[in-house]
View (tube, rainbow, N blue to C red):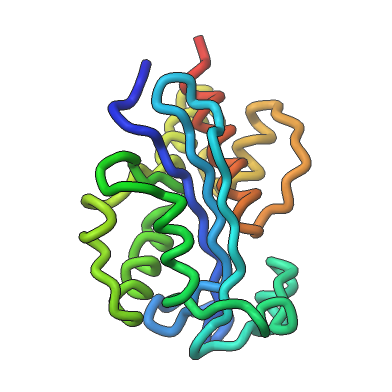
Amino acid sequence: MKFSSDLVIYDLEGSCKTFGKNEIHETNIIEIGAVKLDKKTFEIKSEFSILIKPKHFPILPEITDITNITNEMVENEKYFDEAIPLFLDWYGEKNKSTLAGWGLYYDLPLLRKEFTEFGFDYHQYFVGGGFDIRALGIYWLAKKNISTSGISLERVLEKMNVKEDFKFHRALDDAKATALILQQILNEK
C-alpha cells in the first residue's frame, strides 16, 4: 500500500478562555508538533515542533496540568503569525503532502481559525481537510471486538500491545503516537 503523497501527521495543543468548554473561537494554539511519513514506507522522514505564545488566552493551570506547558515556557516564543511560517516551510509545497492527525474534528477547525485570525489563507497552503487517524483507531478496535468507548491514543496503543514512552498531550509525541498507530494498522497482515 502507498499514498500518492507523503503524510504530515500533526497535533496541536491549545490554551482556552474557560477550561472544559473547548470552544474553538476561545482557544489559541500553544504548540504544534508534526511528523512527515514517507508515502511508500510510512517511516518518519522528519519532525517539527514549536511552542507558540498565545495571543488572547494565557495558559490556564488546568492546561498546564495536562500538557506540562506553562506561561513561562511560551513567554519568549513567537505568536502564531510568526510561528506558522516556520511550520509551512517545513511542510513544503501545497499538494506535496496530505494532512493527517488524531481527532481532526477539533484540530483542523482550530488551525483554520488561527489562520484566519492571523491573516493567512489556509487554502493557499493546504488542500481540503485531513485524514483522521482516530477513525482508523476506532475501526481497528471494532475489528478486534474491543470496546470503542473512551478511545484515546494511549488506549489504542495499549490494545495494540505497543510499549513506547510518549508524553501524551505534547504535540510532537502525540503526532509520533498517531504515526505509530497508523503504521501498526497499515502493516498488519
